[in-house]
Amino acid sequence: MFIQTEETPNPATMKFVPGREVLGQGTLDIVSSKEAAQSPLAERLFGIDGVRGVFLGADFITVTKAEDRTWPSLKPAILTAIMDHFTSGKPMVTGSAPTQTASPADEGEIVAKIRDLLDHKIRPAVAQDGGDITFQRFEDGVVYLTLKGACSGCPSASLTLKAGVESLLRHYIPEVREVRQVR
Image 1: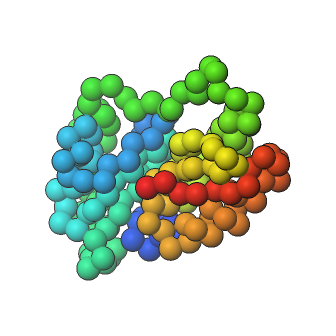
Image 2: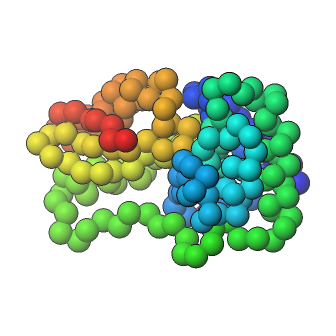
Image 3: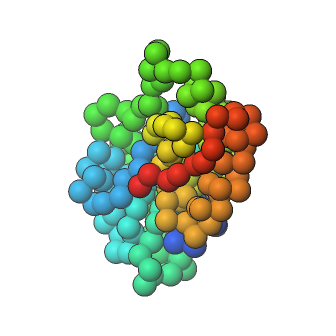
């Protein structure tokens, strides 16, 4: 098995691409070893000293490291853990698989447009960097979003939100005045 590694805009997070499906649909953001119990792979990764976060995407895994650790010291153990997991035959997630946030049937036209732009234009680009972006709400012209994976805590996150996401949403949806991050 060959696992590609890719740097992300967040120097504390690296993207691992195993060349096969990880979750298929949805994402799972695991930010503590307590939460890792829902994924045998995340448990294995959190067993590595220096791993501080695991994000599972459709076909990739991002791992966030502790500040005092280096990628050259962590990468071999992470690659081994990922390979061992895939060869073990264990499921990626125990219990029910993560799901995308469903759109309420009664949401307004503006929110439907925001979700559509996020799903078709923005989320695929953010996934390229090893992360995800999810819609939380729209109130008084402000779109509230959550960044996950490599995008969470990234030094360029505010630039991504303001110059990228906000510009795109404002271009297509005049009612959008601003985008804010919800942690």
